[in-house]
Amino acid sequence: MDTAGRYRRFTTMEARGHSPAYERLTGAIADDPGLLALIDELPPAKRQPNLLLAAVRFLDGPIDDYAAFRAWTATHWDTVRATMLERRTQTNEPGRCAVLLPVLARLPQPLALIEVGASAGLCLYPDRYRYRYDGGAALGPAESPVVLECDTAGAVPLPARLPEVVGRTGVDLNPLDVADPRDVHWLECLVWPEQRQRLARLRDAVRIARAEPPALVRGDLNETIRDLVAAVPAGATPVVLHSAVIAYLSPGERESFAATMRDLGCPWISNEAPGVLPAVDRRLPPGPSPDRLLFTLALNERPLARTGPHGQSLEWLTDRGRAD
Image (cartoon, rainbow, N blue to C red):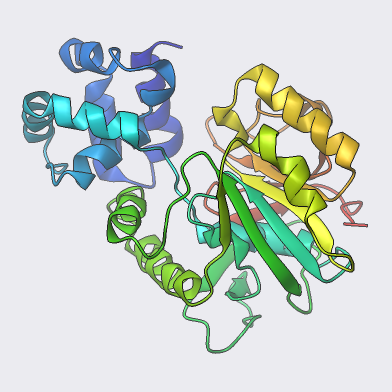
């Protein structure tokens, strides 16, 4: 898919209905040969709409009007380009814990969580957040400032209690530090402009992580995952998890990671878009309209549910989705 097609797809499948500002901007970018030519100077992996828009916001550029956005971005392109090359789309959405929780709670406790593509590690705190499914009673510590709302469909095995987490480790090519204001500002810029609730949730999750920082390792997931699993102390269940990460690997790197996880045999929870993990896709029943972007939640490559990209929805596929 060329860059114009990539931006049109983002406009219709991701921004529409969620961010009017981003829908307007990316729709206009897709029809702007001059700006597309600048974006095409970047490596393919760095041409993402989210990355461009976050970089402009990170540099205090305008996003309310396309003419102003276009003029500012073209004038400051060298700085925008440098920011896009330096940074990554590390959204680190804590809301995704709402779709991970039903699987985590059914695994043998206690858990040592290992997140690949961990960013700042905000998804390593499922036991520190509160959850409200379908607007019902909240589950989780009453003092938590983070309340995750999630709509469900199907026979979701909602937990009666939170998992017991005794280890929080993450690996990332560029781990972000919750104590670094610039890293936190970058995470904030990755939240779409109208989504004030997500922004407030992110800031509250950062405060939780600052009080109990995760162990973040800088490195490649394929080079580190075996050692991280081996380091889990006896008596704890190592759980490898990731969400919206594996798409950034090459097909060969994805298969290498999947082969390693099959060999390790520990619980492996993936929450990725269709087309990312072929073994998961082959087992997935026919899905909804292709104009809806949904992830697939899977345990050891067995699909369990379709999920909203930010953890806002959880549609269980069958009643066989037991995490045992």
